[in-house]
Amino acid sequence: MSSKNILTLGIETSCDETSASVVLNGRKVLSNVVYSQIDSHKKFGGVVPEIASRAHLEKICPVVDEALKEANVTFKDIDVIAVTNGPGLIGALLVGVSYAKGLSYAIKKPLVGVNHIVGHIYANFLESDFAPPFLCLVVSGGHSHIFMVEDFGKFKLLGKTIDDAAGEAFDKIARALGLGYPGGPAIQQVAENGDEDAVIFPVAQIKNSELDFSFSGLKSAVLNYLNQQRQKGSNIKIENVAASFQKAVVKALVEKTLEALKITKSSTLALAGGVAANKRLREEFLKISEELGIKVNFPPIKFCTDNAAMIACAGYYKFLAGETSDFTLDAYAVSDF
Image (cartoon, rainbow, N blue to C red):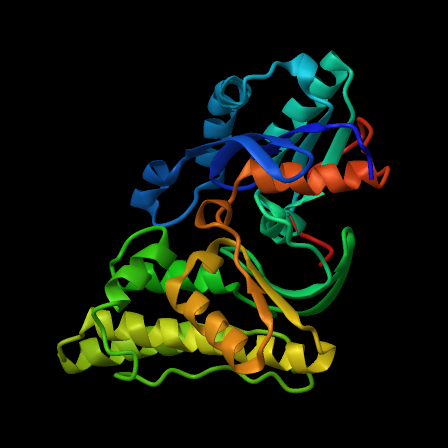
């Protein structure tokens, strides 16, 4: 571990947030600027890749400038540049990667490419002394994974979705219920006034794959229920459907996580990703903590959704391990995980 203070500039453009952050020694967040495109995509019910890419092009320079200003530093003070280079929307990723490569060349500072999913895991380290080993559930709009984090930079994938991600299912069902985008917060808000036992939706059990997830069947079950009720002319209580759907998603996530805890015998559990902000899921994780006597860690809500601080953190630890990128660094849409 280096004794020198290291300032990392993180850059994140994998989907619909343009973000830049300055982080000291991988933990202390000096700035974290996020420009959200939600208003641009709301009317389409989801992210439009071309619109996202163009918005990143417009905002990347001012967002980085604002991050430096808030941290009270200049480019000369930066020691390393970390950038998300996948997975994500390829056009959006290329904006951040191209900017980071150009900046690295111009100011002659090391460049580190960061996996977006790994970035979400590392959000647990921001503003805390939390450290491996631990079991981590990563759930977001594009990802649903269970990892055993054995050490910094050392991960073992235990399970993942075989179709839709949990966050993707939230977005699609929210659209079907007329709740708008993004779906996770919209469903959570409406579900608070609903009966989660009003409709029993299925939780997929995958043969010979005890730690993998599947949400496509659940999504279809909800859509079929809505169609059947409409055909009958029945009054659909949106809040009950939202609450019942949310319960089914959380149940699936919790059941697989509990199974992973049994297999790994891990005494520490962490949550990461945009869906980690879900109140119902956090409540269930706290119950696991109390019942099993294990430690549970959540990133602060502001670091659950896409942000550059988590990328700076992950990049810092890669830099300490001697893992840097050259100017052939490219973006990739799909992760190896």
